[in-house]
Amino acid sequence: MDAIAHWLHEVFLEPSVTQTIIILSFVSAVGLLLGKVRIGSISLGITFVFFVGILASHFGIETDPVMLSFAQNFGLVVFVYALGLQVGPAFFPSLKKGGIAQNLISLGMVAITFLLCIILYFVLGISMPNLMGIVAGATTNTPALGAAQTTLQQIDPSAANEMTQMALACAVTYPMGVVGVIIALAMLKVFMHKKEEQEEKEAPKTFFSEYEVCNPALDGKTVRDVAHLIQRPFIITRVWHRGTVEIPTSDMILHLGDHVLAVSGEEDTSQLEILFGKREEKDWNRPDIDWNSVDKQLVSRRLVITRSKLNGVRLGNLKIRNLYGVNISRVDRAGVELLPDRDLHLQLGDRLTVVGEGNAVERVAEILGDEVKQLDNPHLTTLFGGLFLGCIFGLIPFYLPGVSMPIKLGLAGGPIIVGILMGAFGPRFHLTTYVTNSANLFLRQLGIILYLGGLGLASGANFFDTIIHGDGFLWVGVGFLITMLPTLLIGWISIKVLRNRYDGTAGMICGSTANPMALDYVNGQVKGDGASVVYATVYPLAMFVRIIMAQIMILVFR
Image (cartoon, rainbow, N blue to C red):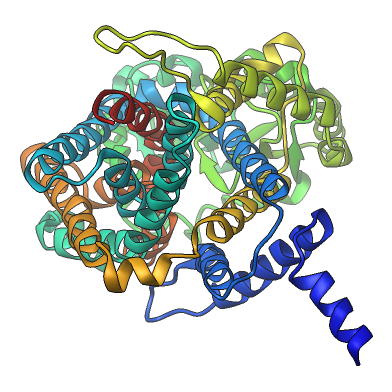
């Protein structure tokens, strides 16, 4: 029995490299199991790993500090770099289509948050490191906490106690950060526009519509000419002419009396009706015109772009319809369906649904690649090369006017910027940066779990004592204010003053606060993926600015 007890003590309680791995794995496993528990539509998800680590540390479990620090920082680097790779391809294009306005609103929310921090700093006398911990928890932004801790350690290597207090402040306010944003979003739903409420009640409308060519100006014009007459994107997928349904080419000539089946944005159907002259109000699956008859002689396949040289190429430049008579009906990118407009920039991993004659489809498949196994092969050289560059970039000092100490992006800021740049521009330099969605999700989940588990184990020893005998309740109140005030103010301005949609506003708030749990709540309340698209648009810049601002606040007010 003594030998068994000694062995158990050595394995679980005596700090070492192996014991740290065992404890961190145990904390992560238990936290993930608890993360499946939901109260209504609310769950803390993988954040439970953080709190299990705090409990383990509170009950006296100690680990090797060097090993724990490595696991924590390496997890943070992997998480933010994988996140940058994920959003990189769509980040810069999103700025051209409303993304700038959405990011400006998001930055306004960030500015209000840190202005509120400065006010609270002078009014309540809370130290700035503790305030940055509160902000990290109130906005569920643990990478910002990592950046603030790194900066504090750089300017004062002996500030271990302050770093622990900062992590405790984050831990205390984190749950309210999750719940508070959800409460604020529920309150903001009251301001949803009546038109948007009606759309939520109605069944989703198809984007396929049938039109009759009644406009004399279109008689004798080609499909290509018609496509340039309005500025809204649409695709003619079928043409009914003299009793025959055909797949159009760009050179096909339209005549009065022809019927066309077009796919477009739902909001653009009224403009297309003006263009063609008449829209058929009845179901386009009509008995007198069999739109699917042409498919009986054709092949429909989903092809995957696996040739890296096509990354970033415009769909129209491939001239697939004219050269091969193949029609592209939809483009799927990471689960989001895109309109196959000729100006759409293709990306590695895009899935194109094509319809055409069998041999022609095979030739198009050869052009696109369509070798899915190539996408499954991990490109570890690029991955670790990106991590290397991200860490180096994060250590480069730069100076801001009025700040004596140099600013460093650190392990939270450098890798995410390099990840975004690699994801957006890497293929142009013949770098294979594509990572499958499942692999990217695995990297992000692994990284954030290691970070949260290590953070909890490193900072949980005084957690409950801080709440009961320290400033825990004050921190919770301040965190609730930091969560609710900027969210409600910016949300109200976005919906009532700027007349933005609720789903886009909610996605912007979730992205600005780095709160995927709140995004999950929003997606359960509204139809469509508008909130998720805006979330991905504002997340990188908001994350970057919060990381930088956390460092600046420590340097200026510490």
